[in-house]
Length: 155
View 1: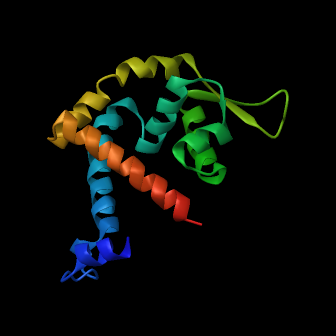
View 2: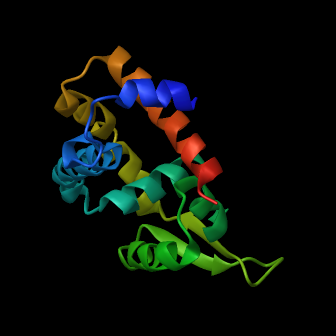
């Protein structure tokens, strides 16, 4: 592996900003968030709230920790987000009857109805990317592989 890495990086100044994988991911994330902000503002959602709604639209009645696992967020980050969503009338938060330490998140009628209003978001984002479906599928798979390797080696 070291030989392949040395060969691939030979003659490149890896301390330049434009050579950094992290910067390419970071700046792409910024652009992605700008597009999502434009698409989600009419729905009254932020991007992290949209992600939480996607999880709940797949399976309602999850605990905070289950949502956190899906989104790679800890409860200290997720709880304020969920409180704002509760204040907006999208979800309810209740203590689990079998374990009062767990908080169960359920969609309200308004939260379930928002799924229909958000139906066009994935297609709109696809159009904004100006990429082919095949390129986006391949990129998603590469990013998932990268995430897996990084998570495994994060310590």
